[in-house]
Length: 387
Image (cartoon, rainbow, N blue to C red; front, top):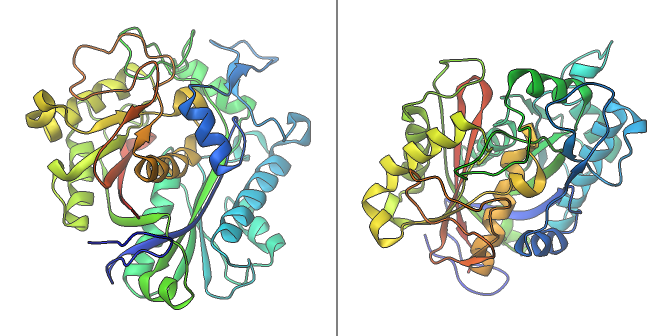
C-alpha cells in the first residue's frame, strides 16, 4: 500500500484511515504535549494514597479528575472529553450521523460501584451527552479492550457496514483494581521496569484514547488528513488461565501472524513494535519468547525496535491498547521512539533492540501494537505511517 506526502496521503482503496485521535494520560492530554514528555523520559507515576494495604502505593493518576468525584463520574468525564477531542481532531462533530462509537473498558467503575444498571451504561451515557446519534458498541476483553475496539471498528469499515467509527478505550483507577492486582501479586513492590532483568511487576494507571477510523472513500470525499492507516489486525485467545498468558507464546504469535497476513506484510517489513511491556514476569517472558519466534532471524541484524509506554502511563488496563496505538502512529510519523522508562539492564533473553536512556531512531513505515489481556485475550494491530 502506498501513501503520498503532505496532509492528504494517497492511500490504497482498502486502507482504513486514522483521521482523528486523542488521549488523556497522567502526563497530560495534548498529542504533542504527551509525546514530548514520553520522548524526554518522563513518567506520570507518583504516590497515590490508599486506605488499604497495597504492595505499592504508586500509580499514574489523572491530574484533572480528582478521586473525590467518584468512579462513575470520573469514568464518564474521561470518556466524554477524550471522545470529543478525537472527533474534533478528525474535523467532525459528534452529531454526525455517520459516526459509530466502539468503546472499550476493562472494568471501568463497576468493581467499586453498587447499583450500576448495565455494564455498558458508561459508554451510552458518554455518547448521549455528546449528542452522538448512533448507539455505541461496547467491548470488554480485559486489557485488550481498547485494541479490540479498534479491531471491531476496522472490520466494520472494511466490510462496508460503516464509513466512520470512533474507537478506543477508557479506564479509571479504583481501590478495587489496586487491591486486586496487589492480591494477585502482579503489582510491583518497587516500580514498573518492562523487560528489565530486575523487573518485579506492574504499576496501575488510568487514561483514555480514541481514534477515528474512516474508509478511504469517506476520507477522500471530505478531504480528511490521515495520521496513518490501520492496515491489519489479528486476535487470538489461549484461555489457559484467568490471568497468566500461555507461556509458549503460541497465542501472541498467532495474533501477530493474523495481523501481518491481513496487512499483506511479512515479519521483515516491521520497523517498530509497541509491546505490552507490563513488567510482570509472566508477560515479559512470553513477549520475549514470542518475538524470538517471530523475528529471531533478524535479531543479529537489529530487527524491529521495541518500545513500551506503561512505565510512563502506568498500566491503564482497558485503555492501554488504544493509548499505545497512538504512540505507534506518532513514532512512525517522527521516525523515533521514546525510551522504556525504568529500563537499566535488558533481560538476557530479549531478542530485539530496546531504547534505553533516551529516544531511538526507527526506520520503515510499518508498526505493530501488541496487547496481552487477562483471560488470554491477545491482539495485534498493524499501522502504516502516512509519510
